[in-house]
Length: 364
Image 1 (tube, rainbow, N blue to C red):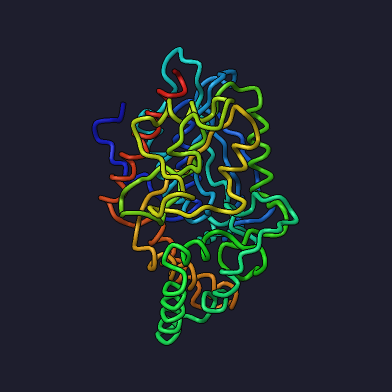
Image 2: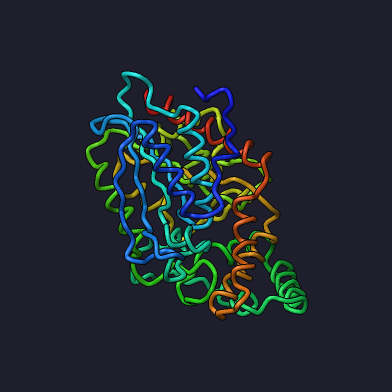
């Protein structure tokens, strides 16, 4: 139970160093244990970068809830806040239950530390779980790459708007979103680049999954921000809306047990939040074992084009080595982790409700 004076908005950090310190302190106070995977790179001030994995409950528990932050680095500031706020408000496995809670903090620590959505190689981690060499053409993105990587400015925005309008007129709004966000493997300086080999963070995820091979049921909830109505939190899985169909291994049944009273968006069949992705963590996780189920929990922040423009501008400034890059990174932080008390309170309440539903479902 949360302390009487608990304020969830105070748990949301503005930088990675504060996020990591707050996370480790919260887990220690809760009696949890931590395993740290230290990155080969260093942080902005020479500090260690790490994915910290905290365990609440028994390591021998056969059912595990995994809450993940920072798959998209800068989004991990909000994700860290959600993890810390829940621990501070009393998140623990129910007494005598065969359940443990695993908190994966900053899966992409480089992006979190340098306030980038991508990793040290400008790779979008949520497109990096492909089979390499990745033969996943995205000709629609190829068509738009030039306007997505132009210098920021008034004229550029006009040219980009005209290009987008022309694309939508020919193919539709949904096709534009899919073209940009699905993932691409031909343009290393572009958006949503999936890389050409498994990244450090992907290899770290493999190590985390390897520690869960003897479990009975594992539910992964991967926190994301930036899409959807402001303050809302929508569950996303391509196995949503079809519980139990096509799977005899029980994974869809686990989703139903956890979220039967909630809507799960199938990105391949809905235009509500997200499109189908190439090389994403959720599909990779599901395919790694019959005991593994996974959903994303996506929290809306700002209008989609505002978020996209912030991503475009920061990406351009980074690759151009523009001296004003930090200004663009501050904008990126704001669109993915708004400095807004009401937003933080709303997403905390939603994350808490999803966590409790998952715990109940895993114990059925």
